[in-house]
Image (cartoon, rainbow over all chains, first blue to last red; front, side):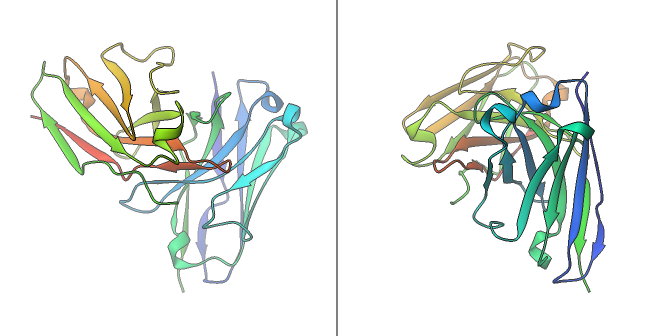
Length: 120
Length: 110
């Protein structure tokens, strides 16, 4: 069974940083692209970015709204995905979902999310 | 990249069929067969219902189907059931290695 468990969310001041983690299990981690998607309270889904699988050299892609501030990485030895979020703004307040990408441009499995609140 | 356009809400009675539209542009929905649909019940994570426009993942009921015409994709749910009441989001490849979601549609089962 595919399981994705996020951690690392919390309350952070504007301009601050956080590192979100996602522990993956139930599948061979390095075979799959991995995504981050966020959802502001009461709002819709917003794709944050993707890190490709080992076969695609772990290359990364980002939404324009976060490019330069957010960094996605992965550690196959720990079956873990990470999202480093810097220069946080109130608009970044959201539940951040870790997700396993499909073989193409879609998202197959989702974690339960971790809440990031940016407020002074 | 602008979000895809979905109706805010759609309603139907049990047993009926409904369709949720998702309108984009020739740069996203209209340019590929990479539209996906997600169901989200309150307080839960989204669940993939349709991918690559028309394909259903294992375990998803065949009451759910996807289609596309021009720049508009649609999710059709037939034989509406109470448990289908949820938010539905479309998503499309938007070029330049990015994804874009729709704003979401609340399905109300009367």
